[in-house]
Each structure stands twice: as structure tokens, then as C-alpha cells.
Length: 415
Image 1 (cartoon, one colour):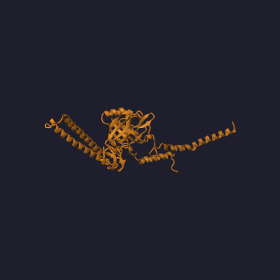
Image 2: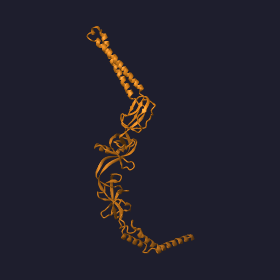
Image 3: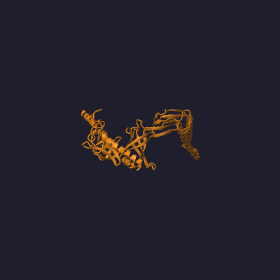
Image 4: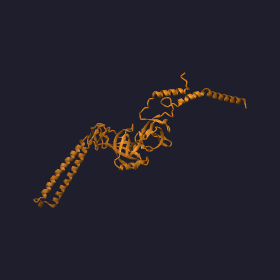
């Protein structure tokens, strides 16, 4: 063996001997003094962890009638949307609505210069009167010629001509009446009125412009009632159709911030007749009264629709259910205030804070909802109500904890 390796082995032997001597002379005292402190219970700074109960929050499983909901994101759509356009052309004399105003069916929205159409109507009325006068003359001639006193002096051909002339003027009067009616309709189109109840949008044309037939003036939107469109996965189609067959389905829009506040209540109106091949979803439309106008066209909302109700379901707070690689479980508190792990099967979510347990629990079973990280099988606990704080330590407990801390330092007093 070389001299170098001899020196290395000597140094290693010295270090080992020194370490053993340190442990024998002083290290054991330090470790012995720290051991009791490591066993101090969380809360008072001393005691035996195996015997001191762990404070936890516990809630009893309860039995409820749980509604079964489906949820989705939806889009609000107007019940009716109408783009108002004139049916005749001319100068736009006035706009008789305010943008954003609520209008009723038949309310005046705008006026177009009526003079040209008024002249056409007057001309049609004059033509009608002229033909009525000619008809009256022809009827008088025919009646006189066809009377007993004059019939023998009038040729049959002339009598036929007079009769046909009466029919001709009757047709002329009818044609003039139709022309007058058409002119009256055209004249009425110069007053543009609202076709629906709704809210007026921003106008597209200002007064003074010459507009043609079909020029968009403003868009009216009906908000009461209103539609909400949303999609559901195709796997839920059968459940929706079955529930729809049992009666009208209630739908609600939820507050997007919190997800629990109901903004509006309505009913499912129609399920679309096909499933989208690209998304694997089907479309539904619900109708809402929207009395307070909480819903607005184009708005995105969360939709919740009730399909069924589970009677006498076992319900626990959602935070009581823990998850592991083997499944869901809860910490069940036994009558002696020790905990045991209980496997459970979830049956669905009740709301934002509770879940249904379809297997593993009975009503009245106490489960831990807070403090699970300090628990294991068989640990003794101090069950507390939600929001309840652990009781303050008594003087005897504080004194015992102080004595245990002193014992943990090997009986030595403060330096």
C-alpha cells in the first residue's frame, strides 16, 4: 500500500472516532431534550400527540330531496328583431323616435315627403269619379232604351251596345277604385310605423336625406319575452326528452360571477331536430319573460335546467370528500371520537358547496370537513361545529405543558 492511501485511511479513522466520541459525550443530551418537544401537540406547545385529540370541523350527513340539473353556457337572443325600412322612396322629413326608446306597435317612427303620393291618390280619385259619371249616363241611356215605351223604336243591336257600354263603365269604375286604393296604400307608406313592441337602436339615416325603398332606418329589438340559446352534449338528449315528456322544464340563468344567483326564470321551449356532427351537441332554446330586462341580446349567460329530483338523497359538504388513487373517501367520526377512512361514491353535485353520496354513508354519520391533513386511521379527534373555535387551555393544561417543556431540556433550568 502506498503512503498516500495510508494517510487517507488514518484521517478517516480519526474522523470516525471523533464522531462517536461527540455523540457519547454531548450529542445524546441534545437529542434527548428535543424529543419531547417534537411530540408536543399542535395547540398548546407540549403533550403527547398520540393521546391529545385533534380539533376538526365535523358535519353530519343529511337527507334531502335533491334536484337534478344540467348546466351550460348560453347566448341571449331577441324574441323578434326587425330592421325598419321604407317601402317607398323620397325625402326623409323627420325621425320621430329617440334612440334607445321603447316603442309600441303602431308608433310613428319616421315620415317621408308625401306630396307626390298624395297627388297620385287625388288623381286616382278623380278618375274614379269620372268613370262613375260615365257609368251613370250609360245606365240611364240603357234603361230608357230598354223601357216599354222606347224598346219598339230601338234596334236590338243598339240595345246590346248600350248594355255592353254599361258593363264597360262598371269595369272602369272598379279599375279606378283599385288604382285609388293602391295610391292610398302608397301614401300610407310615407308614415313609417313600428311593426312590433321593442327597443329602438341607433338610427342609420338622418332627416333630410333622400331614401329609397329598402333603405335601413333603424333596428327594433323585442326584449319581452326573450330567448336563451344553449347546447348540451348528445349523451344528455334522452334524459332531456324524457323529462320534457313529463311536463314543462324549468330553466334559469345564473350570475356569471358567483354562479349561484338566479337572474331570471323561464322554460324550455324547443329542442332542435338534429345533433351537430362537428361538436356532438344539440341545441335548445328557452323562453324567459324578462320583466326586469336583466337579459340583453348577445349576452353570454350560464344556464341551469332542472330535469328531475332525487328523493331522500344523502348529502355532505363537498370539502368532506377526499380523493386518492383508489377513489373517493371521507374521514368518518366514530362514537368514541376516533376517525376511520370510509370509501364513498359520489352521485352528483347538489350546488356549489354540497355533493350527493350514493354509497358509503348514512344520514347522521359525522364526517370531517376541515383538518383532514392531520388525520390518519384511528386518530382521536375533537369534533367542532362549523365556525366554532377550540376551547382555550385551562391553567392546569398550561402548567403541565410548561413542565413537559422543562423535562424536554433534561431538567435544567434557564441559563
